[in-house]
Length: 79
Length: 224
Length: 270
Picture 1 (tube, rainbow over the protein chains, first blue to last red):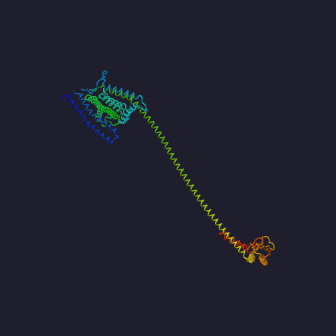
Picture 2: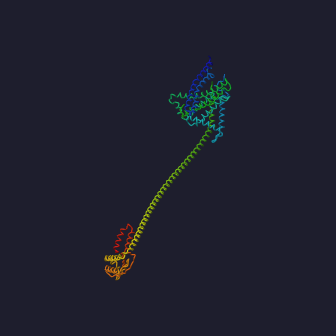
Picture 3: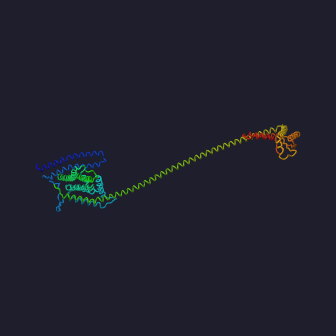
């Protein structure tokens, strides 16, 4: 395997593995937020705002993986 | 092979200064925002405000309140910096949805420049609020052993801020581009709707994080 | 991948320029307008507060006045009630006193009338009794002999008087004429012998000569009257009946005293 094939493989692995963690984390976050809203509907505004921000933060982890993958694909310093 | 999303295409060059696409787009956004503000604020009335004025007041008030709530301090000195940050990021993130245009924030240079501005503003405002020595002493808290780690955290925060913004916007546009090239004309519309939401959320997050950093520097809230 | 330094620099500058522009064109005017509106609202609120406070004060004053009015009314009512009670009590007292007075007057009038009726009846009974007695006595034919005896008794009673009394009968400061004129009234005409006997008895009793002037008066029923110059000695049934009448009509309360006086008077007269 040359360096190109390895780069593509690693990019795929990075994205797929990097998607697992944030997906689980987002699921838990949403579940907790739903429970909290069900318990305190009057706090739904604050909760959903905080939830969105938290989701974006968690998603950032997947984005980091994506950036790494894109770096491997388009800006590989070893090619 | 599609075009690399990581490098900014050069539009033209003025001698040694190369003018890239995000710079050009930013100029356009600046013009739009400034002219729009100037026009909208030309006829402000205290009683019976018009629809445009009401919307403007709502935006400014909301920004003011959010900044104040986040920093737990009077938002007046920070409103120009943080408010502009949010307005510029929101418009820039949404620019990518306009056909033929690309978000300036989808390039690492823009995100990095904004993160740099926030980093420098944090240091400057911290020094102004607590004095040079008092501010620098803050890095040695709680023990001087943590001084390198604190400085590193400061830089990492800025880096993380810029990469988060750039990654989100760029990946969104990239995915839309890929789906568009693979599937067809109207298929990426749901993705574009998601990108609309994500763009605003990212602008909000960037602004709030900047507010938290600055608040920690000036001492109004616990250092993040 | 390469980071374009010019782009980085230009974007940073662009952002700062935009911040300055927006601050100039957006935040400052909008914030000024908001502040002005807030000031206006605050002013209006302060004015409204002042107006409300004024209204509250006014209402409080009115409530105070109303409470005062109610108190005043209560007080007036209580006064009126008290006054009415007092008047009613006074009226009752007056009425009761008047009733008592009327009752007493009625009782007194009744008493008077009863007494008058009793006395009138008693008088009438006495008069009737006297009339009956006079008629019965007048019809009796023993009047003449009785007159004789009455004359003798009158002469004896003159003789039985004390010296001073006898002198008082005859004299009155000045020396009496001689012979002493005496008028003798009798129920029935007296005989010459009886007259002489009477003059002799009187001259003996008085110790001086007397000129006896005889007369008849059937009203005396039976008996005689001796008319001295200054006094009269009555010894007749008429006199006895008059005394009985007087005694009958006299009040019960004074009867005893009057009786005694009468006895004394009779004794004196006798």
